[in-house]
Amino acid sequence: MSVNKDNTNQNEPDKGPGRNKPKRPRLADLLGDRGKDDLANAWAVTPAAPAFAVLPRGRYLLEAVAAKLELSRNRNPAYSVRFRVVAPGTPHHGQLVFHRFWLTDAALSMSKAGLEALGILRPDQMEEPLPRGLRVEADVALHTRDDGTEYNEVRNFKPAEPAPADPFAPDAATARKLAQGDENVAVATPATDPQPAEQPDAARPVPAAAETTAADLPQEEPVVEPPARKRRARKPADGPSLYPEDGPADDGPYQGERP
Image 1 (cartoon, one colour):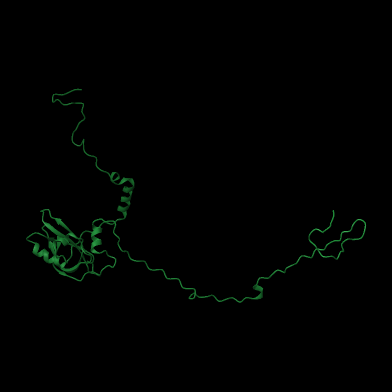
Image 2 (spheres, rainbow, N blue to C red; image 1 turned 135 degrees about the horizontal axis):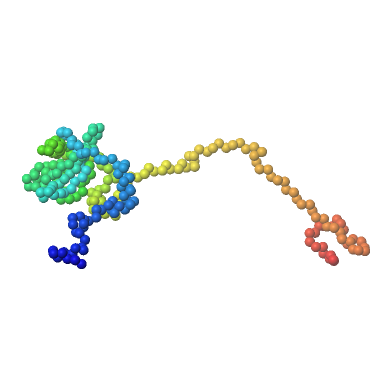
């Protein structure tokens, strides 16, 4: 082993830039070969989501579909709500718009007015799942940033009639358990259409009876009686017959018969 003047081993491999880079993960490492193929197939048939479009200025009927507590990058607390536009028959129906209700001292008064329009009257209600069907009317403003991008601002919230209730939607307690990942929760499902009851025999149509003729009836075969067995008179070798030929018939052996 040779050592140069800098007391470094010249036989050691070069540890220059890029020599000990960690291996880049591959899709097959993360998903497996089958999962990689499934992703490629899904990629081929899935359309890309359209770019987020802002709403034009106006007053809209909005339905709250999701909400969460969060902190901004400056550590300011906020209650972020996602709204969906309810405007059937218009191109904006179903479009999403977001709003943050800031919970700082400076913004609490304005945020409280909007939250009360949503039915949130206590701070702890923001920790619970958002009830279904909450709707408000609000003004949507349109602003432009310095870089030219546009964004919406939602303000002037007013309560509105809630959405029609879903008869199979879980109650608040069940929704809370579902949100916490409780799998032992029974959720009602729509009942299937009942099968029509069978008609009683009296209500069923009876087919007309066909006329029966003598030719259709089964013919009975005639009974043939076997002929009566006659007894033969046995005669001794020498002498007259001991039994007359017209005596009574007897199926058994003759009495007194000798071989």
